[in-house]
Length: 470
Picture 1 (spheres, rainbow, N blue to C red):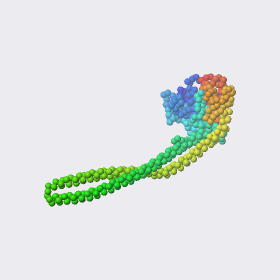
Picture 2 (spheres, one colour):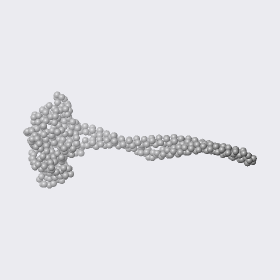
Picture 3 (cartoon, helix red, strand yellow):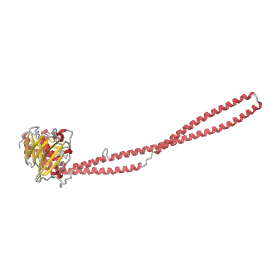
Picture 4 (cartoon, rainbow, N blue to C red):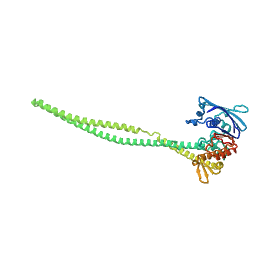
């Protein structure tokens, strides 16, 4: 695939800008603030749309490149692929919903609606934005190769397969990890069910405690009722004795009255004494009765309170709690089996990926090592690339060391070598855009890097503020 030309109607600081490109090496030498990065970002936007919005304006291309005072930015790019040419015309508004895209056949003028998506380049070539940014668009800023989608890893794996396009180790791993987390994570289904199970067991324990308390209260009620009966019986006995003594008193009183009336004598003064004794006796008896009544009433109230509490404690019903426990226990066992199967599948996937990595890893390491050796004049004679694109470099003086410990220039060069190796293995006929990618190279290594680029089959579009030559 080649980029034939661009026309920027308005985009960033550029208006009515045109540029033609050859199939080989294209160099655009311009001073700072001319708009070199703007051209590079325009090409990416025309092929893949605006990058995802970010709060940082420098990373938000829609905000960064919308011309001051304008509501839109637009332009046109012409590309060729597999013998056909396409004209892509796009307009970008302040929001994604305002964007438009048109793709037509340059020869017939026919509109190709199936390509009119946010990523026409992907529809035309099958190369997505992630791969383009990580391998085909190079600048002096480091980009995390492991972030985003895993298109490059998919393609590397496919090198050892039959060309199955749906292969995706990272995507499969992500799906499995998500499923494992949903089941066995800190807030996963198994944890949630175990929490419910704990609550049910607490409920059973509390109900059992209530029933035990009810039994103790029943015993207390029985004791109170026994005491109540004894007090009632004692009161009845006293009442009977009181009635008997009362009859005797009345009888005696009648005798006295008879004698008195018989003799009609001043001895009648004894009558008040008799009546006073009877009254005192009755008052004393009334006090005893009142005391017993109060005690009986207190016992009755206490018994009523206890019986009400017993009723309340016994009303706590387990219902279908045991059935729920059996169901949840079975669900936990089922999920544990599933979790075990998922973890086994993850392990098998990791083992399979390790075997696949042996296939493409050796070729990738060899290619990166070869390119880095060319650029550094054999100072580094070996490179190891991990599954997360972390790299170790080897030289005769220091042995193996992480790329993170290299100088800024060497760091740029080892990642340039990685990207060139990926281009060689995966994208041998795609355009390669370099935006001030060599600002931290010395003259010797810059010359070697440019010589390497001129010997590739890729179309090269190099933006630079220095006179780099060819």
